[in-house]
Amino acid sequence: MVYSNQTETELMTLLKEGDHKAFLEIYDRYKVLLQQHAYKKIGDAQDVQDVIQELFTELWDKRISLNITTGLSNYLFTAIRNRSLNLIYKRRKEMHYLESLEEFINEGNYLIDLQIREREFTELIQKEIDALPKRMREVYKLSREEGLSHKQIAELLGTSETTVSKQITNVLKILRKKLGSLYFITFFFP
Image (cartoon, rainbow, N blue to C red):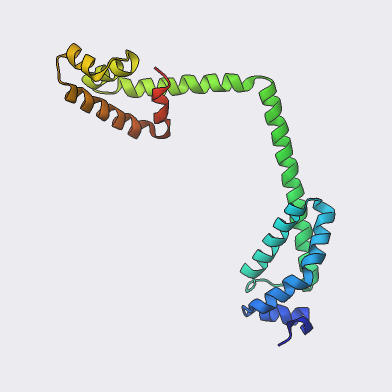
């Protein structure tokens, strides 16, 4: 069968039946025209390629359920126009967001936000440390806050280095479990 001789209606019928060659004919027939149409609106070649790819991917994915009443070319040109306008709208929103973010940073609010987050993280970590059993908490503070070695802690508490090492390992496991992704912060905040 020569697909280039098929009408839009015949190609759509074949497409709905899952004929990949009919799909490729539609793609080849309309790709360049749709690119030109989209480029007039968008003005960026990469965005045009993305919009075209999304359109044809959706055409293939929804080929069975598509009910095109205005003709294939009208459907494709309307779809590409709508996708182009949606992309333009999305880019404008992104630009507005970036401008707002830049303004926020320039005003210095980000420092206040970072200070608030740092304080909240520190409080959360301290809360979890305070919830530890007394001996674990004591070993942890001597290790992390006082900077003592396991040997020094063992001598101070009258226990073995092995016990101190196990206590530290258990504390870190508990904190890792309770704090999840915030766990790494425990090493930055005394």
